[in-house]
Image: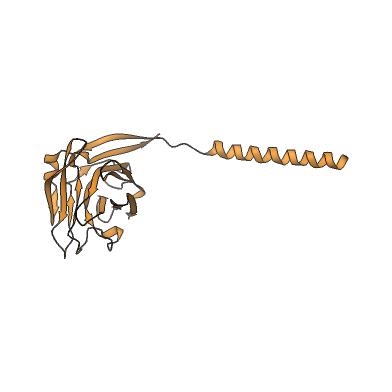
Length: 212
């Protein structure tokens, strides 16, 4: 009888210790809250002034959220092709997120997006606009803590985001259609795929990510 009581006491004691350990682990988890401060929301006129490196940028009949969409397609099979913004001032070592609403185009479902500082500092992502997935994302050199997301909207449209801590005082946004054989760090390189993607110019935004 005494042995049974002793065993029960030991079981209860270890059970209480285990529960306390689990509780302490739960308490130890820190909830990270993020806020987003809008830095820039581009207009169609501003977008048309971006550098068009062997790409065509044309208004289309596509519409999303009552906003006009443009078709962005490649012009070259032998050289890199992309659309690039000018320099955008930012705060060194802060985190920034770029958002864009996109849809697959004719003969193309892969979309490349980059935030770049002084070469080779950058973060890249490739999105599959057919499956609605992030194919890959990666930083180079001194950019840190990358993150990429894709959210389905309607009628084949997706909202894609790319963020990173940037080691730069100025950044550029680079985007374009890409193909399956291209690596994450050279998605804009030469490709036989001359397809394109649709995107909403007024959906392109830059936000500073503030962690509380």
